[in-house]
Amino acid sequence: MITNDGLQTQQIDEYSINDVAKLIEVGVTTIKSWDTFFELPIKRNEKNARRFNQEMINILKDIKLLSSAGMPLNEIKSRLNKQSDPDKTVEIIEDDKPNEEKSFDLIVRPFTKQLNELTKKVDILQSDKENLISQVATLSERVKGKDQIISMLNQQLEESKNNKMEQKTWWRTILNI
Image (cartoon, rainbow, N blue to C red):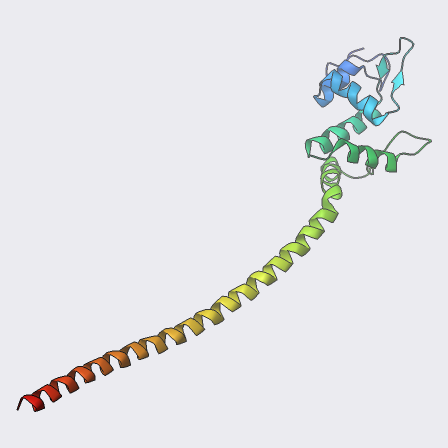
Protein backbone atom coordinates (compact mmCIF):
# COMPACT_ATOMS: atom_id res chain seq x y z
CA MET A 1 0.00 0.00 0.00
CA ILE A 2 1.32 3.50 -0.89
CA THR A 3 0.34 6.56 1.16
CA ASN A 4 -0.16 10.14 -0.05
CA ASP A 5 3.46 10.83 0.93
CA GLY A 6 4.62 8.14 -1.50
CA LEU A 7 5.68 5.92 1.42
CA GLN A 8 5.06 2.20 1.28
CA THR A 9 3.42 0.55 4.28
CA GLN A 10 2.50 -3.04 4.95
CA GLN A 11 -0.01 -2.15 7.65
CA ILE A 12 -1.64 1.10 8.71
CA ASP A 13 0.80 3.06 10.88
CA GLU A 14 3.77 0.77 10.18
CA TYR A 15 6.68 2.03 8.11
CA SER A 16 9.96 0.58 6.88
CA ILE A 17 13.28 2.09 7.85
CA ASN A 18 13.69 3.50 4.32
CA ASP A 19 10.29 5.21 4.54
CA VAL A 20 11.13 6.69 7.94
CA ALA A 21 14.53 7.88 6.72
CA LYS A 22 12.83 9.77 3.88
CA LEU A 23 10.11 11.08 6.16
CA ILE A 24 12.41 12.57 8.80
CA GLU A 25 15.20 13.35 6.33
CA VAL A 26 18.06 11.40 7.87
CA GLY A 27 20.04 8.44 6.61
CA VAL A 28 19.12 4.83 7.28
CA THR A 29 22.45 4.35 9.08
CA THR A 30 21.60 7.28 11.36
CA ILE A 31 18.33 5.62 12.36
CA LYS A 32 20.14 2.33 12.97
CA SER A 33 22.74 4.15 15.09
CA TRP A 34 20.03 5.89 17.10
CA ASP A 35 18.22 2.55 17.56
CA THR A 36 21.38 1.02 19.01
CA PHE A 37 22.52 4.02 21.05
CA PHE A 38 19.12 4.93 22.52
CA GLU A 39 18.01 1.27 22.84
CA LEU A 40 14.70 2.14 21.23
CA PRO A 41 11.82 -0.35 21.47
CA ILE A 42 11.42 -0.64 17.70
CA LYS A 43 9.25 -3.51 16.46
CA ARG A 44 10.68 -6.05 14.04
CA ASN A 45 8.87 -8.25 11.55
CA GLU A 46 9.38 -11.97 10.91
CA LYS A 47 12.45 -11.15 8.76
CA ASN A 48 13.87 -9.06 11.64
CA ALA A 49 13.40 -5.84 9.66
CA ARG A 50 12.61 -2.76 11.70
CA ARG A 51 8.97 -1.58 11.57
CA PHE A 52 8.09 1.89 12.83
CA ASN A 53 4.76 3.12 14.18
CA GLN A 54 3.84 6.80 14.36
CA GLU A 55 4.85 7.07 18.01
CA MET A 56 8.36 5.79 17.24
CA ILE A 57 8.61 8.16 14.25
CA ASN A 58 7.75 11.05 16.58
CA ILE A 59 10.50 9.97 18.96
CA LEU A 60 13.00 9.87 16.08
CA LYS A 61 11.85 13.34 14.97
CA ASP A 62 12.40 14.60 18.52
CA ILE A 63 15.88 13.04 18.62
CA LYS A 64 16.70 14.70 15.30
CA LEU A 65 15.40 18.07 16.53
CA LEU A 66 17.35 17.94 19.80
CA SER A 67 20.48 16.71 18.05
CA SER A 68 20.20 19.45 15.42
CA ALA A 69 19.82 21.99 18.24
CA GLY A 70 23.21 20.89 19.55
CA MET A 71 22.14 18.76 22.50
CA PRO A 72 24.65 15.95 23.16
CA LEU A 73 23.34 12.44 22.47
CA ASN A 74 24.03 11.36 26.07
CA GLU A 75 21.77 14.15 27.34
CA ILE A 76 19.04 13.18 24.85
CA LYS A 77 19.36 9.57 26.02
CA SER A 78 19.08 10.67 29.63
CA ARG A 79 15.91 12.62 28.83
CA LEU A 80 14.44 9.65 26.99
CA ASN A 81 15.24 7.32 29.90
CA LYS A 82 13.74 9.72 32.45
CA GLN A 83 10.56 10.06 30.48
CA SER A 84 10.11 6.44 29.47
CA ASP A 85 7.24 4.39 30.81
CA PRO A 86 7.79 0.64 31.06
CA ASP A 87 4.26 -0.05 29.79
CA LYS A 88 4.48 2.28 26.79
CA THR A 89 7.05 3.54 24.35
CA VAL A 90 8.83 6.78 25.15
CA GLU A 91 6.82 9.97 25.01
CA ILE A 92 8.91 13.11 25.15
CA ILE A 93 6.28 15.83 25.43
CA GLU A 94 2.55 16.20 25.86
CA ASP A 95 0.44 15.42 22.78
CA ASP A 96 -2.03 18.24 23.39
CA LYS A 97 0.52 20.93 22.51
CA PRO A 98 0.86 22.25 18.95
CA ASN A 99 3.97 21.09 17.09
CA GLU A 100 5.54 24.56 17.31
CA GLU A 101 5.29 24.50 21.12
CA LYS A 102 6.67 20.95 21.24
CA SER A 103 9.67 21.99 19.16
CA PHE A 104 10.22 25.08 21.29
CA ASP A 105 9.97 23.06 24.53
CA LEU A 106 12.37 20.43 23.21
CA ILE A 107 14.96 23.04 22.35
CA VAL A 108 14.54 25.42 25.29
CA ARG A 109 13.89 23.15 28.28
CA PRO A 110 17.37 21.61 28.45
CA PHE A 111 18.97 25.03 28.37
CA THR A 112 16.70 26.76 30.91
CA LYS A 113 19.06 26.20 33.87
CA GLN A 114 22.06 27.40 31.86
CA LEU A 115 20.07 30.38 30.65
CA ASN A 116 19.13 31.32 34.23
CA GLU A 117 22.76 31.03 35.35
CA LEU A 118 23.93 33.14 32.43
CA THR A 119 21.25 35.73 33.19
CA LYS A 120 22.55 36.00 36.77
CA LYS A 121 26.11 36.40 35.47
CA VAL A 122 24.98 39.10 33.03
CA ASP A 123 23.27 40.95 35.90
CA ILE A 124 26.47 40.77 37.96
CA LEU A 125 28.55 41.98 35.01
CA GLN A 126 26.09 44.83 34.40
CA SER A 127 26.39 45.86 38.05
CA ASP A 128 30.19 45.66 37.85
CA LYS A 129 30.11 47.75 34.68
CA GLU A 130 28.03 50.43 36.40
CA ASN A 131 30.45 50.47 39.37
CA LEU A 132 33.42 50.80 37.03
CA ILE A 133 31.76 53.64 35.13
CA SER A 134 31.14 55.42 38.44
CA GLN A 135 34.77 54.89 39.51
CA VAL A 136 36.05 56.15 36.15
CA ALA A 137 33.89 59.28 36.50
CA THR A 138 35.26 59.88 40.01
CA LEU A 139 38.83 59.39 38.82
CA SER A 140 38.21 61.70 35.87
CA GLU A 141 37.04 64.43 38.24
CA ARG A 142 40.12 63.91 40.41
CA VAL A 143 42.39 64.09 37.36
CA LYS A 144 40.67 67.29 36.21
CA GLY A 145 41.23 68.79 39.66
CA LYS A 146 44.87 67.73 39.61
CA ASP A 147 45.26 69.06 36.06
CA GLN A 148 43.97 72.41 37.25
CA ILE A 149 46.43 72.38 40.18
CA ILE A 150 49.30 71.46 37.86
CA SER A 151 48.28 74.21 35.46
CA MET A 152 48.18 76.72 38.34
CA LEU A 153 51.59 75.58 39.61
CA ASN A 154 53.07 75.83 36.11
CA GLN A 155 51.67 79.35 35.81
CA GLN A 156 53.12 80.31 39.21
CA LEU A 157 56.46 78.79 38.22
CA GLU A 158 56.50 80.85 35.02
CA GLU A 159 55.60 83.95 36.97
CA SER A 160 58.31 83.17 39.48
CA LYS A 161 60.87 82.71 36.68
CA ASN A 162 59.76 85.98 35.12
CA ASN A 163 60.04 87.71 38.49
CA LYS A 164 63.52 86.33 39.00
CA MET A 165 64.49 87.48 35.54
CA GLU A 166 63.10 90.90 36.29
CA GLN A 167 64.95 90.96 39.61
CA LYS A 168 68.21 89.98 37.93
CA THR A 169 67.67 92.64 35.32
CA TRP A 170 66.85 95.17 38.04
CA TRP A 171 69.99 94.29 40.01
CA ARG A 172 72.12 94.44 36.90
CA THR A 173 70.71 97.81 36.12
CA ILE A 174 71.43 99.06 39.63
CA LEU A 175 74.91 97.57 39.70
CA ASN A 176 75.80 98.99 36.32
CA ILE A 177 74.93 102.50 37.40
